[in-house]
Image 1 (cartoon, rainbow, N blue to C red):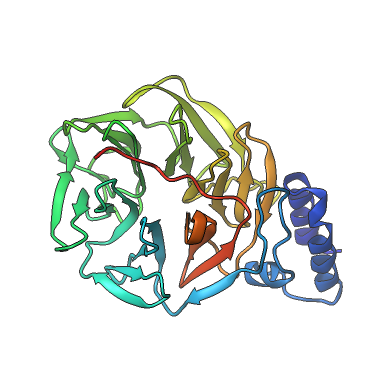
Image 2 (image 1 turned 180 degrees about the vertical axis):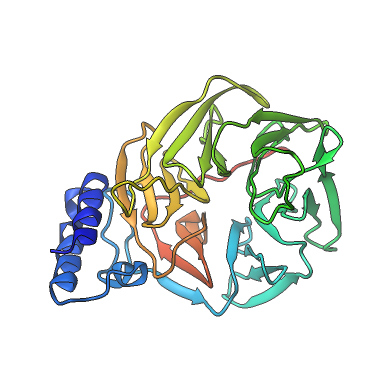
Length: 333
């Protein structure tokens, strides 16, 4: 048996419950027949096997393709989904009927998006700003453009809290060199407009999200396998971070991290990675992996009952129906 499959099988067995045995058997059959073990073929070897109580409860569906690099999906309360296509400098809108249109162009390379309680879009511009986009007029208002008088590197992902503040990451991707901030970090923008640097010791902090009770902040670095959790002591005030989990790797000595993530109503995390969406309980226990035909970059819940998991993955937009609903961050009006 090929060494690369032996490792993938071992990693998946550690991370995936017994209900995934069928998928592993099918992958093993693919290898025994001399099949390609590329990421795409791994994802297509079998339909996603359900994780008990969570899903999926159906196949992964490709909604749209032939895009450039999709990111930052965000669902509103009316059934619309917005997402970024970074190289195309566009924000797309997928309406409740399934029609795709360009919502904003040029977008200044927006990445992470989230819907504010007022219905507007809050976005990370990788050109150096955090902005709010009026959903009706499409007017863009800068919320923050730097820290201590210097522009951000390239804001990447964000999450809004109930106090009216925004946690966001600022890694290296698409940033000018040398880095304007000289280091990669994650920040908090308070409702009053004050920016606080919260941490700068992770390798490319990328995804960020709060637990449903907003007592824990999760930060997902891209260049290390350890994912971090921080106790939230107050708006923009964190306690000491701890390793929340380690992502399963494709290579024995791998140290690859995650990208974006989302959270369901029970606090389970869905972290995008080279293997697909790796799902973890609030206690950091690996629950399973949901594979996709392309490597996922970010995810969010939306659709009827907030039980559709939307995933941006390289050139495509995908969806899969879940048993559990996603958490909706209420924000502050």
